[in-house]
Length: 268
Ligand SMILES: C[S@@+](CC[C@H](N)C(=O)[O-])C[C@H]1O[C@@H](n2cnc3c(N)ncnc32)[C@H](O)[C@@H]1O
Image (cartoon, rainbow, N blue to C red; front, side, top):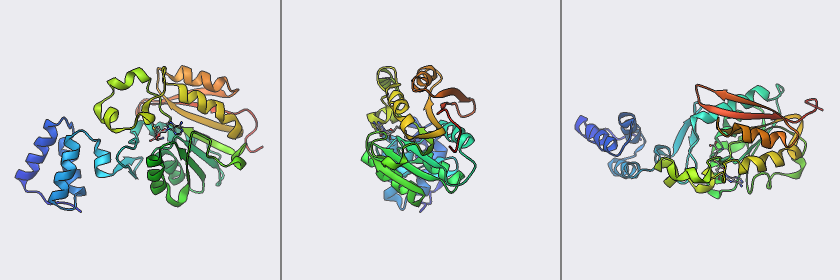
């Protein structure tokens, strides 16, 4: 792939992208040209981008922690800040190979994929309620784990109960009333089920926290991505389930994670 562009064609493409509001128009022009198979394909990709579709959905992939993660149209685009969730999970993963990790609300599967790539040998389970996300996650996770379709933990096999070392969730946490104020790329091109966290944004966090004790091994951890403003409510949901909670904030990634531990000695 790669459509060679004359300087004039490249400048025209950059100008068109810039006029459509693309801040990094030069980089985007180079990426679109690199991804297109021929001039007609470049025109089609450009039209989609100019119409406001997220760049990652247009080109079909997103960069996440150095990985190329497939992103289908209509599926949530993994955000760089979610790297904070991966980093926090890596710090609590048992050192021995073979730890069991569950990625709830997995979307493209980016979080589980990053964990399985950065810590080889994990037993990874992921799930999502959206069939388009599950199809995408299956492509991304491949043989590194199992991706299931269903509501939160409902599709997990019963024999995982009490055996999960790390349960991660980047569930929707935008308060319903704030969705209208999101950038159009998210509001118009990512499904509402991927964004809407209910009145205070923490509905799904409460459900994840309520489900977690059934699955976590003694000493196992639940990690939930949240925001600075919502961290208190997310933490309270976890504390209400008898978990010991701390909040981690990564300034550089602007990511906030509630880390909640099930009491008990790890490995028991
Ligand atoms: C904010 S996106 C995050 C996706 C992915 N974890 C990531 O970080 O890129 C939230 C995801 O939760 C899924 N979701 C929403 N409600 C769900 C539910 N009740 N059960 C399972 N998945 C759900 C959506 O389909 C969406 O893929």
